[in-house]
Amino acid sequence: MDAICMDRVSVRVTVEGSDAAKTLLHDVTLNLTEQRIGVIGANGSGKSTLLRLLNGLVEPSEGTVVVHGQDTVSAGRRVRGNVGFVFTDPLSQLVTPTGREDVELSLRRTVKNRKERTARAEAVLDRFGLLRLADQSIYELSGGERQLLALAVVLAVDPAVLVLDEPSTLLDLRNRELLRTTIAGLEQQVVMSTHDLDLVLGMDRVLVVDSGQIMFDGEAAEAVAYYRHACATALNADQLGGTRR
Image 1 (cartoon, rainbow, N blue to C red):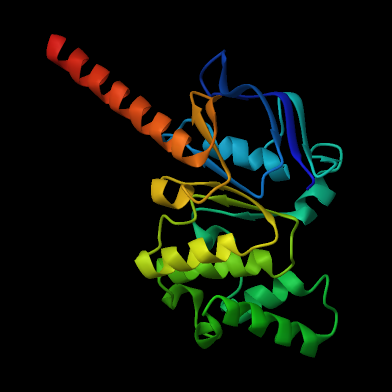
Image 2: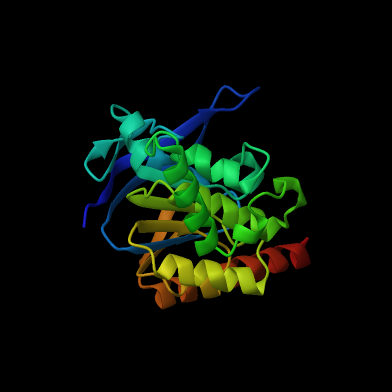
């Protein structure tokens, strides 16, 4: 399988009102070849920055990011054509009034025939159990239905890599299970951040991110155990500090 390679990548941003740049990621080197890769960590740890590097939404301040042979800076447009990105909030990427229109819009560049495009869109929507909602306003859908629709829109164009930033946040149990089984059956290389530790246990490899660095990189069960222990240790330290004050 083609790899996702990060070589000594750091990301820094300028904070308004401060002379010093804020470091979001620091000196990250990875070679990701597995089919299913999970990313876990606390809010603000750098998970989303790591994921956004993969399709050029964020560019490295130092180092290089190469996705399946393409540099995300010098070949950013080609990378974005090969990397599908699903955001936490589906309304940030659903741009037309209905699901049918959104899926057809994503297919417009690759499927020129209108009838074929309609048929393809219906097949994609049916795959996610959304065909009955195809012509309903996206604002009338539940949060979970919107999230599944966003996933359908991205997968309609068959990207080589699928990146999901906390996709289960708005899902109920039924739709979470649908998401899990869908991810398990995809041909694409999948990189997913999540707070759902049960969901991440199905991954081939899991990264634990903290303070902009990779603190653990290994098998899913071991990564989850490491993260649970790190969270418990931090909580105990905070409670101890509060007692002393």
